Image (cartoon, rainbow, N blue to C red; front, side, top):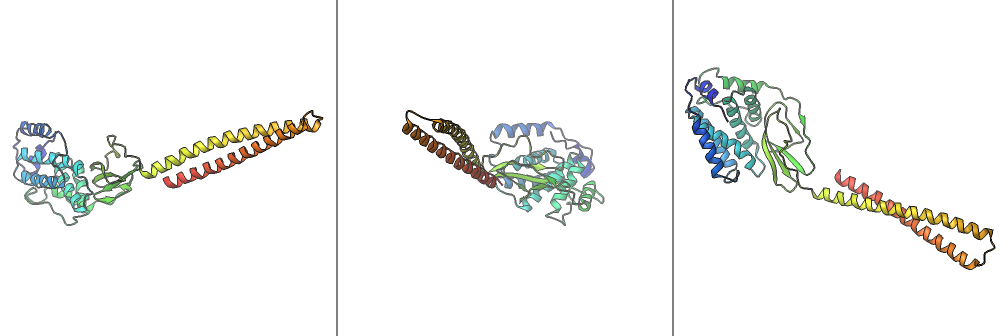
Length: 301
């Protein structure tokens, strides 16, 4: 539930608080009317909701403000394409106002810091921050003075690409908010949401990306390498056994005399040929297994 009491007190310094039953009823109607959370949603709807937030805040229209704020948040996971930096800045401004209304000054500052990356000369409209030294203006000033911070590492599974505020990234900022979009290798949106520096990411509810073609090729290489290694091991053991038997038979023939010397020599020759063939098979299979393993590693790299 969004608490708008700080909005009404801080924005226009009035002590009037509207009943919260209407926003609750509005939320229920949205859920019941739209089983698909992304039906008819996207950035256009989000942008309109952001404008509604500002207008409702300036007019102290609490039900309309809360409905618009919910709509902004609900639309972020429904933008299937990569945002532009300007579109991301629009979202940050809405989140700054939303956080301020919920008495979350730090989150508001983080969102303003992100918006200033694209809109460095942004100023809070007088309609929602009347007078001099308004708390919202002070938060914006703090955002302008904030340092860049140290980027945070991101550990995404293979097959997923991270975009922050419309730009591909391997790290996330530690001093500002970010609109995160995670896409699969084939360009489909896997997950999207709003990140603060203290937000856990990747989130536990993010689905696993499908295996990429790269992963499939590498897996086939490793499976084939394993099968060839098994063949090499079996052929090597068999070759060693035949070699041992060949030595034993040769010793018997050498000690002689044998009643069947021709047959003994033929048997020795057959065992020698079989041992040699198995040895070649073992060596070839081992070489192929090693090569496929290296190929799989290169593909994954």
